[in-house]
Image (cartoon, rainbow, N blue to C red):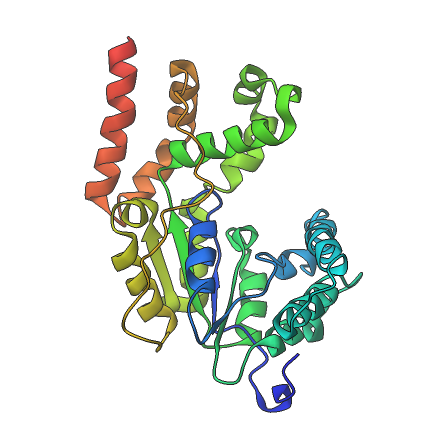
Length: 294
């Protein structure tokens, strides 16, 4: 913890709230490299999910598990520098059994004086209005970045990650056909609910960024995000990394595409109000594939 933290802000200046599989790891990695910008050593605290009146039961265990795993690595080292000890202190803080607002505020006391502070946490994507008010209570000026990816592509990427993590235990045919099994993937694609809710809570402090822009022009898009969150560092940006954790391109079976596209038509209709040209391209891609297979 910084010894001058008593005089420093104890809140995030910005949050990236997802969506999952829409380049949040790219954004975390890109921001983490910039001087004068602080992100916690553990990417996602899930604080607003863990402490909600309708909490996600898994949030605390995942936070502790991620921090304990990294902490185990540091505890085995005998050559720790001051910087490494600083990271170890963060990890010990993240390993707390119980968390509250004071705990969350203390996360940002590890920053250096003058640093811009933030968190990247996709589980905040669908926060309800009462939890967005809790975000505003911690910092009424907080800036929000919400990343948007083609709905079918986002879900397919999430399903492939899920299968990779669980291996043969996942029956894709059954998952795609089962509304209950698909629900978690659909929930993180409900742009028509999440974006209006965040917009109602924070107004023009919300910036929606398309995954396609990150993939096609990462450096320029990173610059636009930095302008939005108020970063005033060096104008000479480092070369932006390509999106991370995208996964190897895997052909989507036509039956899966048809099922997902049908389920998500309302999301495409909503996203047309944000970028009609890009959404038209997404629609053409999926409809063209379906027509070719007919």
